[in-house]
Length: 166
Image 1 (cartoon, helix red, strand yellow):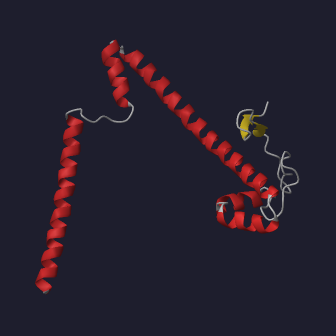
Image 2: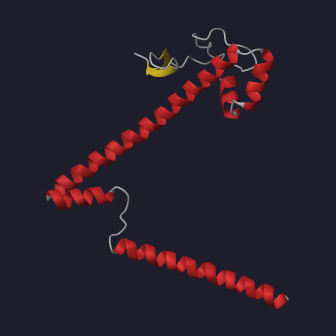
Image 3: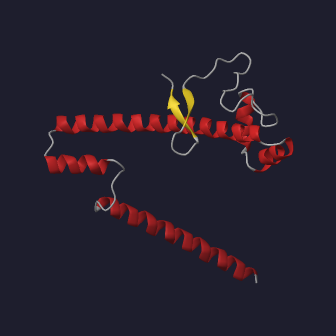
């Protein structure tokens, strides 16, 4: 029996090793045969080839693409921040409409813990209704109000939308 267990482990190890070797070899071959390209590089190479770009033009195109990529990355981060603030505000507005029993269950079953923590950092809580559904909460003691995101009512579906402060 002990021999069978060792034999099984040996077969398993050999199968894993063979699978890794086959995966590495096939990926290397795919890159060599240009079936796979480095992300983003394919477009620059194709533009360079199809448009007969000079080395200077190729470098400038690369700079534009890198700059655009950086801007998109920053915009995504800002969007995630605004979306998070919008969702937190929605959770707080819903909480303000509920009775204390409903609010406790809402907090327990529907509000993610990270939003509860963030609300507490802002000086707000799901335990008590907000001062007003349309008024932002006062900033926590010692903190300046965040004026980067303003919540404005949407004219299409009645949900608030994020708008940049002027």
